[in-house]
Image 1: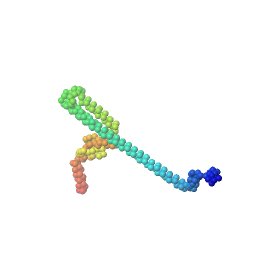
Image 2 (image 1 turned 180 degrees about the horizontal axis):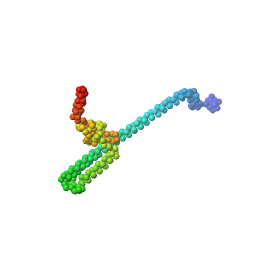
Image 3 (image 1 turned 90 degrees about the vertical axis):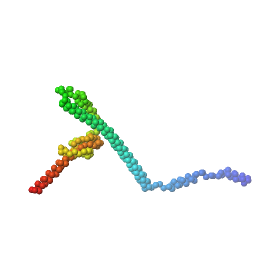
Image 4 (image 1 turned 180 degrees about the vertical axis):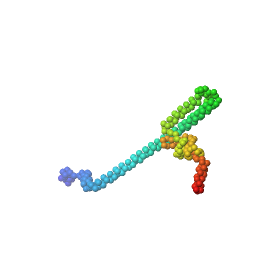
Length: 244
């Protein structure tokens, strides 16, 4: 048997053993896993505290954001309501001019009726019930009929404005209030106390406690002659006391 044949025979009887792939690596990983330390109780407790702190901070940020959003909504609602109220006031004030015109027309009709009655009493032969009387409009009772119609329209318009919250500001006989009145003239009069409103030039209006248009008024002041007499009277009294 030759040497080469002997080698082939030995190889067939004892085949070479090859190491399995990856077996050594798995062994190394397992050893490393066994050697890695587990976190201690203090480390776990510290980590829990950190997470709780982060959670509390996140909750606080969320609550602040929610509060800011609610404040923004409330502020927006207030601004919208304020704007709506301002628009409503402007619209209501535009209806006060026609109302005042109707009231002036009614005053003119009442004056014309009075003048017509006086003229008839002086120049006409009126019946016992005044049926043949003529007024300034050339017809019997036409002034009264027209005045009644104007009065009805003015009353209806005033009722509508009052129902919407618009109220006239009281003036004549009231003490002057710079928050509600605007004095365009002062007149000397002994019949009223000083700073008393004696005449109304243009009506003022309010909605609740808010003045949307101040009233234009005339305010009373003491006459200068009366002030002079008061001062002279005081001086005379002082002189009498000194003489005594």
